[in-house]
Amino acid sequence: MTLTPAKSPTQGTTVTKPDVPRKTQRRKAFDFRRSNTGYVFLTPWMIGVVGLVCLPLLISLYLSFTNYNILGAPKWVGLENYIRLFTQDQRYVHSMLLTLGYVVVSVPLQLVSALAVALMLAPARKGQSLYRALFYLPSLLGASVGISITWRAIFDRDGAVPQFLASFGIPEQSWINNPGTVLWVIIALEIWKFGAPMIIFIAGLHQIPKELYEAASIDGAGPIRKFFTMTLPMLSPVLFFNLVMGVISSFQTFTPAQIVGDGNGGPTDSTLFYAVYMYQQAFQYQKMGYASAIAWIMLIVLGAVAALLFLTSRKWVHYAND
Amino acid sequence: MPTTSRRARRLAPLWRHLAFALVLAVILYPLLWMVLTAFKPTSEIIASAQLWPKEWTLGNFTTGWTFAGIGSFTTFLTNSAIIAVLSVIGNVISCTLAAYAFAKLSFRGSSIMFAMVIAILFIPKEVLLIPQYTIFHALGWTNSFLPLVVPQFLALDSFFVFLSVQFLRGLPKELDEAAVLDGCGPFRRLWHITIPLITPAIATTAIFTFIWSWNEFMPQLVYLNTPENFSVSVALRFFLDASSGSDLGPMTAVSLVSLLPLFILFVVFQRRLVEGSAMSGLK
Image 1: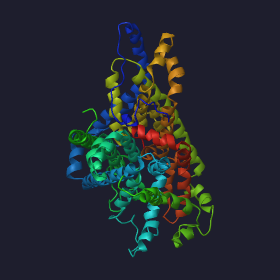
Image 2: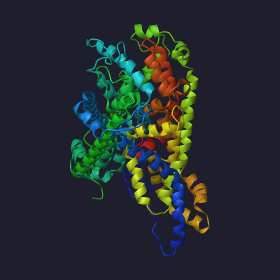
Image 3: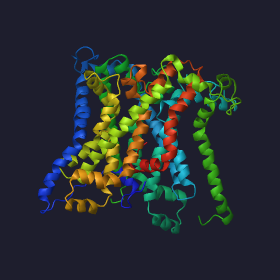
Image 4: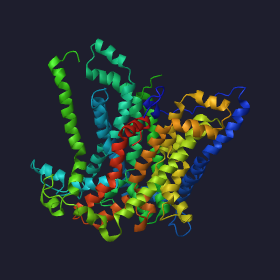
């Protein structure tokens, strides 16, 4: 892709206000005409936002206070669904804790892998673009059902990984049917997809002025010191972006939980991810009201986590123009 | 590195390539396993730990193609392709229009609306799935492609709106201004001036939409209920349920086929994919 030089790749990761042309006296009449065209161009989007985002959010908020099985009319039950979730539904609490634990383990591991490889692939050298592409490939394929099936086969009994470990004397056993290990198989799959954050890290590393490193070298700073005092702070906006996106997407993990696990959250609820439980309640048991409460809590939790990250980010994210 | 000797410096690239090769071997192993296992007889998959097939066979593909007796894999591939292509058309048209409005036109409320584009980026799709299901159910659209395709015509994939807005802002204003002076309206400006200039952004939107749609699972599982409507993702899930793990050969073969379109896109567009991903954090 030919990018215009004025636009740097990392600018794609920052949120900026749209470019509203300054209104001049001369153009005022013209601007007015343009004004309506904007709405014409945005008509599909506005229909979508109202019909498929705002309205659904309100519907699901309403449904979360009802019992609803799609066939009959929703029956108002007040806060009952929410109370039941936290006081009587141990499987729900389990799915919440499991998912949070998964996020806390898998996202940092994935980001550390991504950053480590990005540091090696960022400098312009021969063959780097091929390496970048190959490391990126798993990110493209990893979300598919086909890869989850492969993952399952590799870690199952007689699969490649248990067989390989057996050659070191570790007893061969299925990692899939074992509630203690299956979650690690899914975490491994998440780490495997480190290519996407890696590419963003590389773009971020390219934004750091070379002069900084040269100056630091003259001052006698070693590579480790340079990494912690320069690279990491300069990279913190990109790290922050990757962290927020990673948390949001891994909280919604569904496909690998459904395919690598037994499809119902098992063995013994060890793959009962939040989204899996919501799916079960909504589309297997037809408890749409109950599932809506689960969905709204997800929205609130993710909103809270994002807010928390944004608040703490002031302490550790350094923007160049600060 | 001023402290290392010249000899070490000459050897450094070699070590680096060796390290990369080793890491890549681990990372790409599952894909290699997949390709080789797809061509092995099932008896050999179970009995032997050796990666390279002793005997090559196409039997897994023929067995897998009509696996579980619910239909031909051709149907599922066709369904997935229809959904993906319609999604691409929808996203390209609707996201380009929306992005053009945000980047190049001035109108009241544009900042608030753009903030909403960003907000939608953060709303988990799972949260919208249940209420959207009730809406599509009321419209009688369940068990069809409509719930999977119609939203794409409404510019709700904020990533692509955002990507195109960023791209459009990088274009020189002079061209647009000259066209305005020549009396060229917004639609003609979009079509004749902007579209040719933003083909990279459009191509990125198209490729990523295709990949996302092809990999999509939960919505397809919810909306596609009968085998003649199954997409590849849903069919594979069905295969997995129906098999007992003993059909590893056919299972792997159809999984491999399901990934082929993505492999092809990767080989053809790898530069664009990597750069597109760098621009706005797409996966």
